[in-house]
Length: 132
Image 1 (cartoon, rainbow, N blue to C red):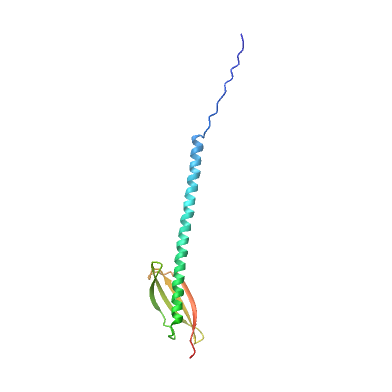
Image 2 (cartoon, one colour; image 1 turned 120 degrees about the vertical axis):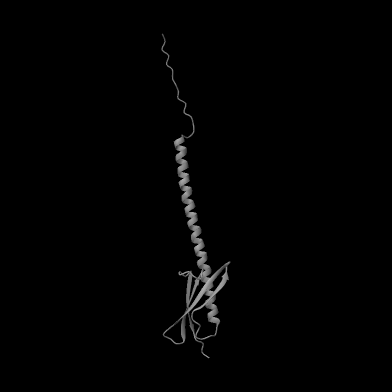
C-alpha cells in the first residue's frame, strides 16, 4: 500500500474584509467632518474680516469728511448712515475735548445695525483749529 500524501493548498483570495472596509469608511467620514468644520470656520472668519474692513472704510471716510468741514469746534454726537458694499452702515461721531483748546479728538464708531451695543469698527483722529 502506498502512502499518498495529499497536499491541500489554501488559496488566499484577494480583497478586504468587511471590518477593514468599515474601518476605512469611518476614518474617511471623520476626516470629512473635520475638514467641513475647518472650512466653515474659515468662512466665518473671512466674513468677519470683510465686515471689519468695510466698517473701517466707512469710519475713515467719515473722518475725512469731518476734517474737510471748516466748522469749529466740530459738532458732537452726529449720527448718520451710509451705503457701502450692499449694506447700510450706521456711524456716530463723538468729539472729545483735549487739554489744548485748539485740538479736539474725534472718535468715529461704525455699527452694522443702529441698535447694536458692540461697535464693528472705531477710529480716532485729532483735529486742530485752523489759524486765520
